Image 1 (spheres, rainbow, N blue to C red):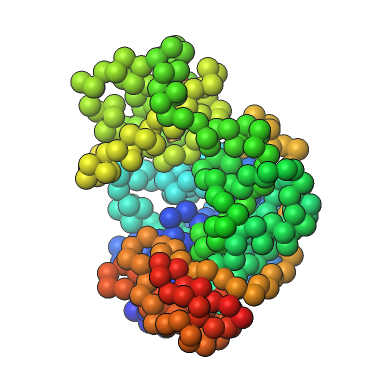
Image 2 (spheres, rainbow, N blue to C red):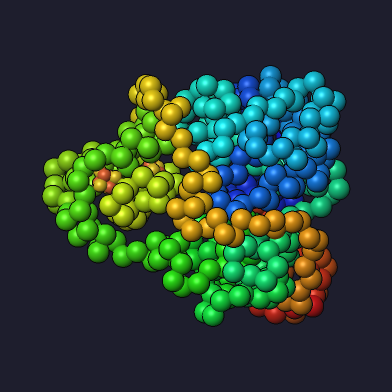
Length: 438
Ligand code: SF4
Ligand code: SF4
């Protein structure tokens, strides 16, 4: 297949980043790259989806990686994987040996090893400037499930209609399930035996970077995990922090120890984000230090400053998030800023996932969540916007009969992908979401 044929197929099949912001995968396949990285460095505590999928479907995923690399004309296809993922490494090593353009790069156990900018530096030694795209350094990054979805699109003519989701913590049967897109979270948790605490709170996407969702929210193309926790759990409380109170606390308790900056993964790579300077500006309501606020745009939101670095229990992340939202609402975008030198002590300033897990009070939930088959549902509510870019445009109307895998929304103009029916049934309503009942 040519690169253009691959791009068309991925857009038509609705393949987007399976996690994070859901960037349409076809749009990443641009010329100018010399390295393609498969991101298997998932670093959020309790998330094990990618390493399990790569071990289970190693031939499909690695052959698709090699194929994409050849179509792009890149020199190297590198699987970035933590050395601690021993079962996965055992499964992929003989498969990789069959492909002359694929290699393995093992990574240290640290958070956030899966951050694209950190991963690119660990794999290639290149630094992406603040605000720049990985392609500026000749690199394209896909995660494991995205490449598996690309394989299914290219070789099985299968569109993206479901998502692997790890359900963990206060749930009877922690597991990783293949779930039809548009399934309600409540139904998914029920499928896993139900919550083991009263009034459970659901966190979608991981303890560090995830967000609280409701039981009526649905599984999308980017839902990697649902953590079920009690309302009193520290992670839930940190997600419910009030920025106004945090600003007062910054004024009274920030001692300017600078630990938040000294351990910030982006700061250590020479990016201009400086949470300690930002906290000083907030504490003194110093609006003249405009750079401290503007540089909030270069924060990745990894949460390390909040959950690991600050011994005063302050949260630079919450206040930086607010500053980012306000800057964006004002139409201010991050310009590309050249990265300064890498901090000489960077290598010794790793945040081990195990320690992070203990600090988050999640170590007790570190039990296997094995791949356990597929879930069937009778109804789905599929959002038309599950990716970055323009929402897909419906091609069905209420009353239409659809079959699983048939297109229900086409790509809009600009950056967009198609959406397909996760189940067979009748379309009940078309709005911002498409409702289908079997
Ligand atoms: S680590 Fe906490 S106390 Fe130290 S500078 Fe950062 S916010 Fe202030
Ligand atoms: S959340 Fe904190 S540690 Fe992470 S990038 Fe932003 S400032 Fe740095």
